[in-house]
Image 1: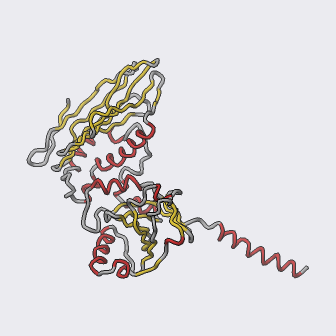
Image 2: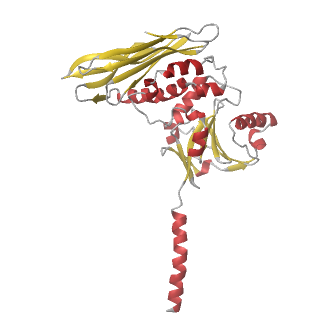
Image 3: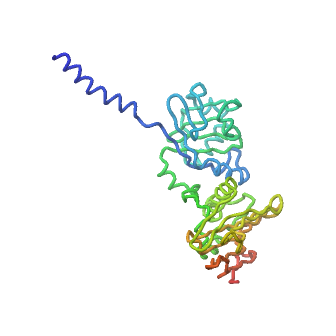
Length: 352
C-alpha cells in the first residue's frame, strides 16, 4: 500500500508538469512593419506599400519542427536553423555594414549571433509556392525579439512577439488598426481634414521625402485602407445594403485601362433611383487622381474626397458632403474646392 501511495504521489506531481509542457502555447509572431528603406538605400514607394498591403495581417506560428505562415504555407524542419554571425552570413564587412544600418534605422538589434532559417520555396509542389510567397521572401532571420524576412527588393518584412507594444510605437500601422468597412473611411466626414491633408502631405511624390512626413500624411492611411477595401469589392463584385426605404449596391465602370469608377446605386422596388460615383482611380504618367468615400451606416450621408498626387506634391482637389433623401436621391449639401499650391507651398481652398 505504501509503495502504491508513493507511486500515486509521484504521478500527482509529475502529470501536471507534463500537461503544462504539452499545452504550452505555440510561439506566435505578428506582422509589425516593412522597413522604410531597402538595403540599397531606397525603392519606389509603391513596392513598400504593396508589401504592407500583402502582409499586414500575416502571422507566423513557430514550433520546433516547422514555421507556418498564415496556416497555409509551411517551412519544414529540414529547411531551417543555422546560428551564424552576421559576417559569416553576408560574407563581407561592407554588406554587414549595409544591413547594420537598415536594422538600426528600424530600431532592431542585429545581434552578434543570428538565427537563419533558410527555405526552399522554389518547389512548385510547396503550398508556399502556391500562395506566392516566393516572389517576396528569401531567408528568415531571428534577432532579439524580432523575426525578419529578407526580400528580393531589399526590404525587411518585420514580425514581432510584442505586437501591442510595438504596434503602438509604429507609424507604419496608420490605417491598419481600423476594422475594414466597405462603406469607406470615417476620416472623410470631418471637413477639417482637408486643411490637415494639404498641410501634412506637402512633400514630393517621387519618393524624395522625409519618412516622418510620409507617415503623418492622412493620405498614407487612406491609401493603405482603401487598397484593402477595393480588393474586397473586387472579390465579391457586388455588395448591397438596405435601410427602411431603399436598397443600395456597388457597381464598377471601367473607363480605360488605368481609369475606373465605382458607383453607389440606390434602388426601390427593383427600380434604379439614382447613382453616385464614390470611388475613382485615374493613373496618368504625370499624376494620379483618386477619389475616396465614406457612407454612414444609416445610409443617410456620403462624403467624398478627391486628391491628386504628382512628382511635385499631393493635395486635395475637392471635398463634398451628400445627403441621401428618403426617395433615395443624392443631394449635395456642401462642397470645398482647392487650388494648386502657390509658390510658398500653400493650397487655398474655398466653398463651392
